[in-house]
Length: 183
Image 1 (tube, rainbow, N blue to C red):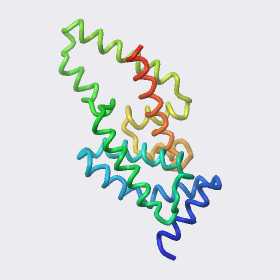
Image 2 (image 1 turned 30 degrees about the horizontal axis):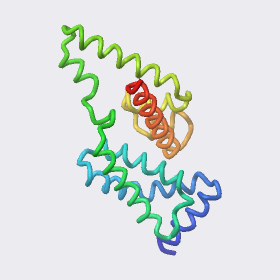
Image 3 (image 1 turned 180 degrees about the vertical axis):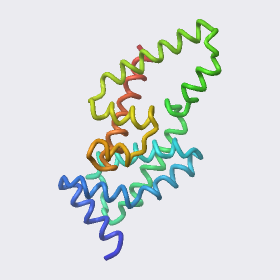
Image 4 (image 1 turned 90 degrees about the vertical axis):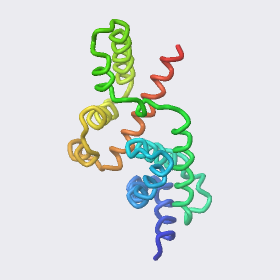
């Protein structure tokens, strides 16, 4: 049995609702996807974000994969397109970490302090919109620096489930924050 045949079977099982089948596709193709994203972006953290977004997109559009034997090629196109889009628009994760911004501000400038306070309020409001499981994952991973495996162990779930929750949480946060900027 070759990898393409196995991919094809995993795609069929995932389309049938088998979450473990899709998790296996993620495990199988994560390194390649990360390499493609890293090649476009040059930043490992941004590449990880793009990969997570790409896998969620692939899951949501799995029925559009016309040739399941070529799942890997289809997925890599999604990764590359999302990496190119990511590079064109600046996301929240491309900016400097808040700690560096706070250090640079020095706390003496009332205007900067007001901006940081406003940003903190916007973030807290956006976090409040998330379901509890997504909020837990995003805070543990992005704020506390926990690894996917550590979060999975804590929550009694799989790393794949943690990755999906984190991806969905980040996407929803971006949507909430972008909506607040425009309004």
